[in-house]
Length: 308
Image 1 (tube, rainbow, N blue to C red):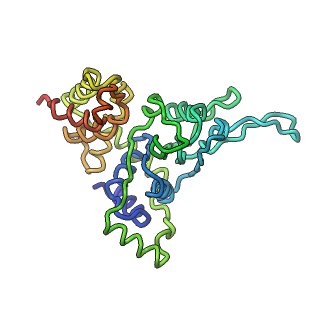
Image 2 (image 1 turned 180 degrees about the horizontal axis):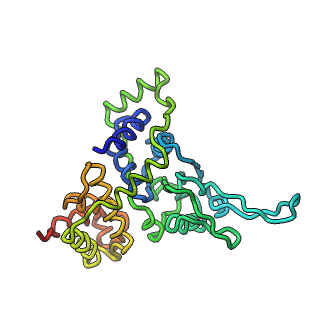
Image 3 (image 1 turned 60 degrees about the vertical axis):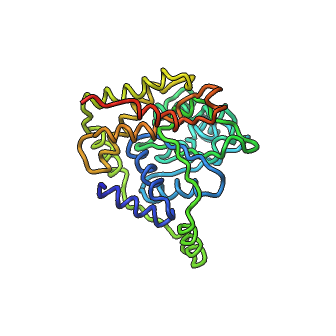
């Protein structure tokens, strides 16, 4: 694994117990320049995971606690009249930071959810007709509880497509739970996490990732995987062009984290399994049969071959 990635992972593991694989995927999303959706029941450490990442980097961080009465301007900012100076001035919202945690995103209204769309895609917001660029690197981490829980608004497909990867943190195993309990009883569970990487480090790694080579046959492999999602009876709406680009960037980041300057077929397949399932809209019959997006991508990968 890349040395800087190892340093960041070890630092996060001081706060997040027994979730090395999840931490890998969080770092992967950051280095890919994407956004992350953490979906799970309350209390499994979604917010702690986002905070562990932010605290391990010397980047600006903000948290938006989403509620039913959160408004779009609570996220993007607004223009207010300054009576002392006799003019309007822009008050930036919490989205104007490097890492933005939108906690319990599906508890706020669809109108407020949509306020994140422009900034997640274009890395800028428009306030009072003026465009305001966000600082780079920029990453939105959304957390949400399962949609069947009371008082939630499921995220629309258009917004799910803005997230590169969707993760479920999951419950810790018994060994990790025991370690967590010991840390809690000795007062070490919430020990401070200090920055180990800078914004420059992150930007340099992202720049290196963009130069990772992908051979033409692997590009065709990725295209065939995405195209297959559009030709399955179980899938009403397949992966978008944005999903293809996210998958390729994710594959490059996987190669970088493995200290390679080139992608291999396994990078494409792993990236597909990470970036595509949550973007698929399954048919009603597939949902009734309890088929998941993960099931469909696994099926497609088993049927799609790399041309040598």
